[in-house]
Length: 475
Length: 83
Image (cartoon, rainbow over all chains, first blue to last red; front, side, top):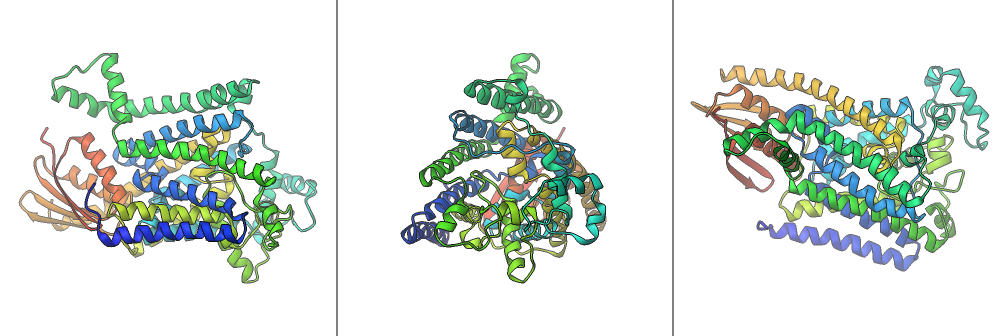
């Protein structure tokens, strides 16, 4: 390992010390805080893995289309398979906290919008968090932009009501939601209650009609739902982007250039091209699976299904939803907690944004200091900062006018895509695919399409700038 | 972004301050325009771009002659591959 600057080591220990102290002191205040602490340390591990492997879902597809590099696409497939295998055990034993999402054309459209946005910003929702941990101001601006756009989009009404199909409106009203929730006003409310909730929910195991719990989880959801499509995707990636350079290297080394063994060795070389990314994917996948198991254990220990109940028992009622719940996914998630902290600020400034489904009925608007998923995201930034410090890669970096513009535009698209798709690259793609949820791949297909369009645009944009620079030095 | 001709056959690309995908895209475009055997010095400070640039150069066969790390700033010297 390279020499680590002394001040970096000190700062890394300060951060670890802070999170440790927070865990201990809050537990001393009330044992229920251990629930938040579990989220915190899994977030910390996610942050370390993401920074170590430069793990970014945006680069998975963007780098393929832009520069022909498959390393991250490989890393993500490894992480999904590992996550799927660990969490399949959790599911088969009846301990999963996962809920599949309704699927439909909205999943693809949402993924597409999100995909364009993540290419413009330079990082996905989780990528922006770890880059913020590296001291990157553009990453911080992306987080702010995703957060603000979601908080506004979740409660937007007025003229946008005119864009709602009447069938959605009727269906939303017919749901008979609590009086505090005005489902007939607001685009998102009518989209959710009038359209999304009417869509089917499907796991690969259900589609195949497998009844045995273990066979359903491992054969249906993991093998058919993840391993098979992931392997096929990587075969396509190998033939389109990796094979040519592999055969060139074989020829240069005077080694065989044809035959099944050569192709299989080439496929494996693509998998192992970036050990750092592969290792990060491996740890990330296992940690994400264990996270589900631990959160279910916490819920069983305290006899609850949502942290909102524990908040109530601690006498904290502000920000609870109409169901008495708060956002408590039970696994890795990124965007909803970002919407919540800005939504909470808006609420404190006098905006009544608790009359909608997203905040008012489902997720609540708790103080960010006691929001379980907020603890996870903050610790994710901290974990990434620790890893960056220990590799001398932490650096405060401001933004430029150009990057700030892309961060705001891209972040807004990612915020809107997240709400339409009920999650981001993590919640709507990574987690759902890993659980055998059909909607995950639909979001992913859209995200790949969006990334392709984003890369086309950026190619044009950078070509223009490069041409100007090159003209000056007559190349 | 700054692209300069340092001397005959030697160029410098400075993409400090840029995040993904700018450094790797500018590197790709610079190398595409340069002649075989010419040298490009890439200066950047986005660690994740380094991973993508290294993988890209491995695929294209362009040679990384030197990697210098100064705090968070990275300077890589690359020679464009001769066919």
